[in-house]
Image (tube, rainbow, N blue to C red):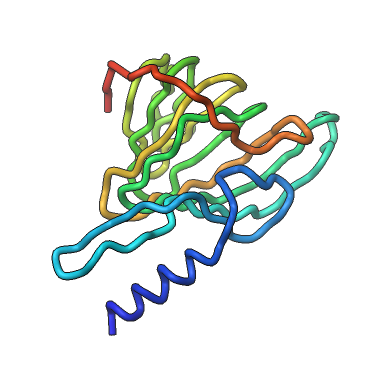
Length: 185
């Protein structure tokens, strides 16, 4: 029964078609490329690497003409690794559950550790890799190249708000060969 339910959930998730940040105007769950996983008692299956759900958008909000304000929820599957990317504007993201391996390839991210408001604030300058946990918040600006990976066995859920340039995707992939060298927790 459990296996049938798991297979049903995987098949339902695979029906979503869209890239991470590739559709900045529609709402509802979207998915990115799959990750292949194998268990000891089963054959390989494909799961959704990142599911996104746009919770709201506002084009040209007051005080930000030429920008789009978006509220989004990302769910990153266990074992998934995102491609390096930027956000054409600014993204503020909060880890709602799970643990994210977060890599800044170039630029500077601002991290507010939990509890927000009283936890320490860090500047993370690339190349560097850190771990973000439940309650941690990260601010990513403009041309800061970064990516996340879920190296755990449970999904990572992130709630984010973005203020991006009108007509641009929420995230734009970046080709890079830079390898991070610093790891901190």
